[in-house]
Length: 450
Ligand SMILES: Nc1ncnc2c1ncn2[C@@H]1O[C@H](COP(=O)(O)OP(=O)(O)OP(=O)(O)O)[C@@H](O)[C@H]1O
Ligand SMILES: [Mg+2]
Image (cartoon, rainbow, N blue to C red; front, top):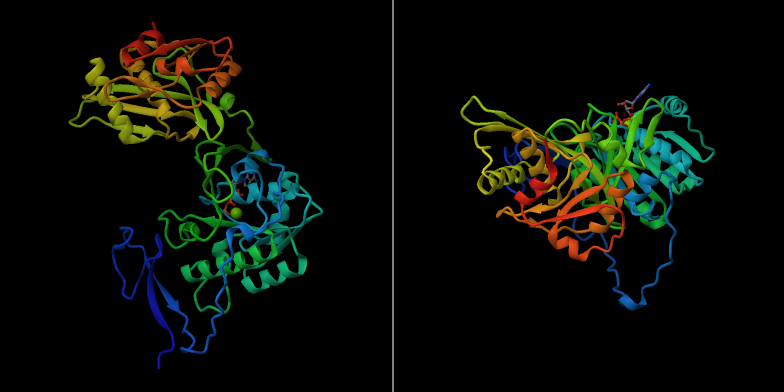
């Protein structure tokens, strides 16, 4: 008799099927089913369930636990003010982006015991990296291990405040038949680590890989289980790295942390505005500076537009760091409301520094950059442009205006173009010259120079 069965699991959404399917009926992803062995269940009646008792909300007490500050400000902010004891965090990112570097640097600054479990590198390799980064710590214990039970035993023995598992894909439970990285292994290892974390009140940080296809190794499947998911993003073409929270049960998901990858490791960028606009060439058309909010933090960015005639049937539209569909809408507004002929032109849009922005407050600067390049007129280099553009070409109000104005003044700008409606509500009393605008036409009149 066959004691073990197989089941097929979608690696994107964990949907289960008894047979292999080309397309997942739940999430629609293609070729995502992988075969998993199912452990035989205990015969009915052999397991005794003990029901948990509900407690009145007002009777539940908790102690005010202190968060673990890593001393790496950018990481602490993204976590919502440091590591929460008893929580489990997943750090994801492309191969080679710098996940191990970030965590080794942060862990070495902690003055509490840290257990760094590496399944990918030997203790010597980690020591080599630590020497290159110039970090050393009395409190940092290294363990080159991949077997979950051995890891849990080491945790029990050394009682660390922070456990780092680098990476969850290499960790496996030898009681299961599946190979490391299989979905069953990932789920089982994560839930057992989670049990230990919650029970003993330490913090666990799992490092996870994303494969090119986003399958098998994909930490997506773990996102539901863990408390916090942070992603380390970056462009292989530049040295900036951005840390972003995707899910956080203990803090906001709007904050970002900015780092620069150097030979000596990751350097925190405390002043991203200066970094992102530092290489601006003010004397060409199509370049404008705006101020976006990343969580509670205002950041100045450069937006570049390039418009060229299209010699083929359908013109090209390329957008880097800005929603492609939003760009199409703005081009339609510029054409219809301002009479700018863009339907036969190639339009390229770029937000410099590899930053991605989703907020509508950068609609107006996007329109200004494109119009500036199309009309071959420069944008006043002393001006900052902020505002949402409506389909009627009207400029709509935006949030956090005071913070944005303060940042613009701090970096040395002298003028700012903002929605008229915002002018009435500002409490800012600085030196910036504030120009309120009602529509695109007005805005272009203020910002374009010869
Ligand atoms: N000797 C070195 N000198 C300078 N930079 C280095 C050196 N070795 C590695 N790096 C930088 O560190 C990056 C790799 O960092 P790290 O190993 O922390 O990434 P990772 O995300 O943990 O990778 P993996 O997915 O392989 O675990 C490299 O891409 C490179 O930019
Ligand atoms: Mg690594």
